[in-house]
Length: 307
Image 1 (cartoon, helix red, strand yellow):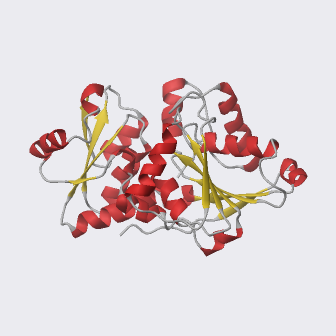
Image 2 (cartoon, rainbow, N blue to C red; image 1 turned 135 degrees about the horizontal axis):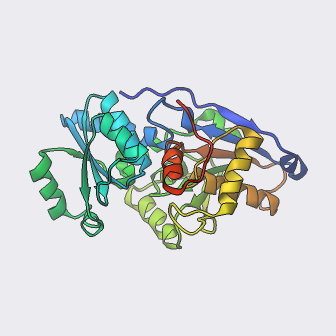
């Protein structure tokens, strides 16, 4: 069973917060495990337990070339003595980037497929063809969002977090956001910051809540204006903010998820979204391994997290 470290809450101090009468803190899920970082720990924990219960010794999942999910699944599978298979979108290019080379060193079997074929990742016929190729396996969807994952993300918040009026999370596939939503207290509001371009995320979250019949004592709101061009897109403004945030608070962010969320929170604070005496908790969802790959891909240096 994956065992987690304590997840400290780090208070942030800045004149803008004092001027607005706001308290801001960050829950450091990036420190939850030495290898299975952030929200991925919570998404994978019960999936791996279920795989073992079903006596499956192989785990198969999907992801892109710089996927945090692929990286974390490789780490988690090795820790639990399970064989991992990663179906990777795109062609194999040597040398492999830092994410994929690390996954392969850990023993993950990488299988590359073209982008058109990859779109069939949820189709029964395609999944059946993968079972013919790789044998019986436990399937974890791209991004890791399924019922066991939401069960895991429901445990992110604890009693200590009830002091906060607002909980803030980035949104990708919606599993972490949905789990947080179902564990809110009645005085709390969950703010989601979509890393993807488009308004479709509202329906996707609503569908997840309906699909898994999630109930909540709190409320939520989703912001779709802090995507910086879409998934894995960025601007110089975002890069400058990530560097400033590190210099100001000593906390590393990534440009795909946490950087966009933190930018959005800071923008809302400066534009008086939050009432005086609001207490905001930012969920750091990890994924910092991706900063190395980001620099490889773009040549842009970012702060990195060193294990």
